Amino acid sequence: MTKNTPKLRHGAPPDYWLLGFTLILATLGLIMVLSASGIMAERFYHDKYLFFKKQGLFMVLGVIGMYATSKMPRAFFYSMIYPMVIGCGILLALTLTPLGLSAGGAKRWLKLGVMSIQPMEFVKPALVMYLAYFFSRKQGQVRTFSVGFVPPMLVTGAFCLILALQPDFGGAVVLALLLLAMCLVGGTRLTYLFLSVGFAVTTGWMMIVQSPYRFKRWTAFLDPFKTAKEEGYQLVQSLYAFGSGSLFGTGIGAGRQKLFFLPEAHNDFIMAVVGEELGFIGMTAVMLVVAIILFRGFIIAFRQEDLQDRFTGYGMVLVLAMGFVLNIAVVLGCVPPKGVPFPFMSYGGSSLLSSFFCVGMLLNLSKGVNK
Image 1 (cartoon, rainbow, N blue to C red):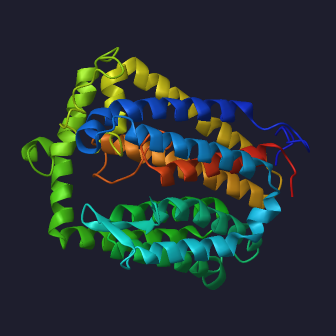
Image 2: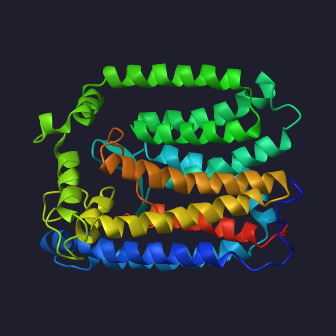
Image 3: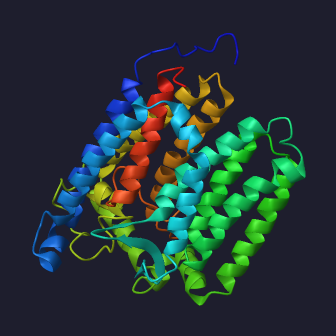
């Protein structure tokens, strides 16, 4: 902490900028879910507002959870790190049992009574909290191989192995990126990181070339218009949506790509609908809101005096940032297709609850000492 860095005073109010722009983004997401899903929901479920009502319910639960998380002592969450990691691991493993739901050729969902959850969304903040705890407590040994490198690799590797069995190759990549980013600030030797990245890239490429499905998705990413009616269809329709939006967009509700042209219009590709209906100006406004959220999050993390608090804040912002960046990169064709929801915008209760938890932790940290 430098002399010129403002410190958070005890009992300071939460960061209202972060709170306000998070609620703005979530509210816009609720509107866009209605716009993107209404026609599809009416045809297949005879209820135009089905997904809107479900997303609205999870938004209410998410806001309540965010408020509770911002008020509770951080010591409670820090004392629950290992139960959280173990619990998330069990939930993730249960997707491989008959309780898991198959969708798109993978078992990523878990049926719990009247609702379904995607454990991967809860694994991300749980892993971040574990890594923040680990690196803050092991600073004296963090540059050693046996203590500073192996434990976080084993924990993250266990999650990645389960994801690979689902299979969810993209989810494993996201966790690996989180680990890499946390290791960089945690103090892990760069030599170990370079070797592990090389191993991960080699393993990932072998998994792609040995799987016809993954290899087709890779080639479709390289030239989606060559397979516009097959593997490249979704990306091509996404690009058409952005192109149709032009400067000011077609207007909310007036988009055409959601009329059964663009698959997953209300889920992972909702930003394509946003681009079409709100245009370049609207997309710029959304990206500005996202930038403010991330900026305020990084400021909160940087101002923490306690190392675990700082790493925790940094990790929570990483979870959100990776969702924002990877989703928009996928819908624009900048990276291979991967089912990454856009935080607060994409339809899905698990993603929404996880995102609100991350913001809740940041709001908690923004209030200063609250052990």
